[in-house]
Structures are given as C-alpha cells and as structure tokens.
Image 1 (cartoon, rainbow, N blue to C red):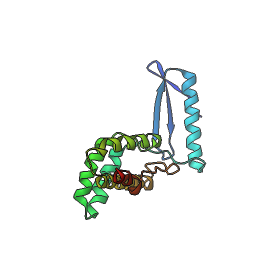
Image 2 (image 1 turned 60 degrees about the horizontal axis):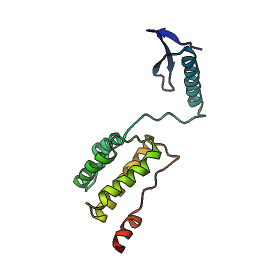
Image 3 (image 1 turned 180 degrees about the vertical axis):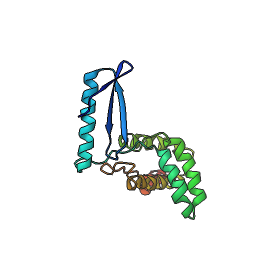
Image 4 (image 1 turned 90 degrees about the horizontal axis):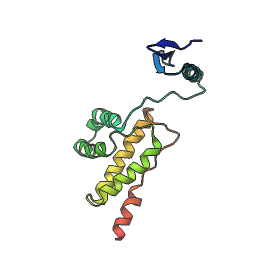
Length: 165
C-alpha cells in the first residue's frame, strides 16, 4: 500500500485509476492525505471488480452540444434548425454539469420562464424536444448518470396552458 509523500511542505498522494492512468492530489495534513489515498484505492478496486459503477468524467452541456453538432446534427434534415436551437440552449445550459442531475430541473424551469414571453409555445416545445434528445444521448454515451433520468415537461403539458389563456 502506498503512503503520502512530502511535497513542498504538503502531502502528495498518488494512485492508479481503473483505466491504468496515474493520478495525484496534494493535501495539507498527513492524516487527511492518508485517508484520501485509502479511499481512492478502495474505489478503484471496487470499480475493477464491478462492485461500483465507473466514474463519470466531468462533462458539461457544452461538451454534449459540441458532440451533437459534429456527429448527429449533420445527419438530420433540420441541421440548420438544430444549430439555431443549440445556440440558445448553450447560452442557457452551457456550463451546467451533466452529472449534476439535481441542478437540471431548476435550470429548465428558469429557461422556460425566460422563454415564455419571447418565444411561441411551439418553438419552446421544439427546444425541449432537442434538449431531451441531447440529454438521452449523454446517458447513452455514459456522460450522464442513467439511474436518475431527467423528465422534462412534455409538449402537451407545456403548450396546453398557453392555449387556455
């Protein structure tokens, strides 16, 4: 078992992750560093044995939007429409982390509240459809956790209130 080593007055820990890549972190306190090292080595061993799901790389909405723009949108007939919608979705959700599923519903609600006055209900519905499709792709690529899927408002649920008014 590895031990923390002195590094410029602090304590460095080094471990190898489940992919075989060398990782490193630095801490002020030896006990904290030793605890973190044991915890990281245990997590890696559990992942290798299949007892724990693989760690998700920190990706943002911008990453999946870039992937969509390069790989999926060119195959669609509505390529230009997707690029136009992506421009607006990037402005609203660009820095939002894909793994932070708890932050997504409030962000979508804020987006809907901001878009309601300036966009038609059909346009907003198109934005929600593309957003949901892109987030399902993120789950497929394992960039977003699948155990807590995000349920966006459906077209019917969103458009119906505006038709009643």
